[in-house]
Length: 163
Ligand code: HEM
Image 1 (cartoon, helix red, strand yellow):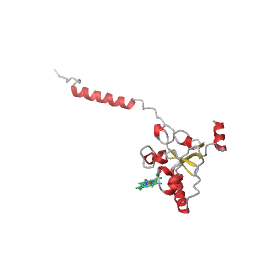
Image 2 (tube, helix red, strand yellow; image 1 turned 60 degrees about the horizontal axis):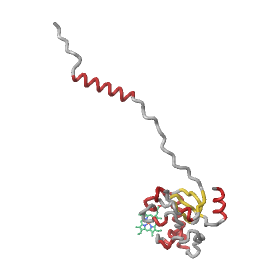
Image 3 (cartoon, rainbow, N blue to C red; image 1 turned 135 degrees about the vertical axis):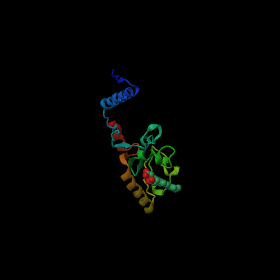
Image 4 (cartoon, protein in one colour; image 1 turned 30 degrees about the horizontal axis):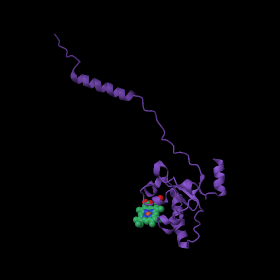
């Protein structure tokens, strides 16, 4: 009598389960494609110095700084300006004088946030040249998100009225 080997062998069982598994992998529905989340829209707005102040990278806030009235979003440079960074003093502030003078000392910052903006009128040609250099660099690297205006100015009042 012809003795037929049973097809149900351990090796065949393993091969079969491998086959079933591969078929399953093939037929498994692909994860739906999701688009990367778009960054929040940038709205150009006015900032008074007190309004700019919280944009210093703390409490998950973005990092902004102002140079000669233009507010730059320097969040991409968080390592420079974020909390603990070497230039953290500039975050949320008017950095014009510090950049012009090449100093990140505290006394380069406008003390009275409710007072007039720093006119920089005492600076020399060399310092303005340095400032222009920084402005050029920032313009290439960062987005301008607003304009710095003094507290109580017409522009600040107009912006407040629009809110
Ligand atoms: C001790 C001397 C200093 C050293 C060793 C130093 C070092 C550096 C380095 C390595 C960078 C990174 C450059 C890059 O990767 O793009 C940088 C950027 C920068 N530094 Fe300094 N720095 C010094 C002093 C200063 C001072 C006195 C100021 C004050 C104005 C300053 C302001 C800046 C700014 C604004 C940036 C640009 C960050 C950006 O691209 O957003 N640095 N510095």
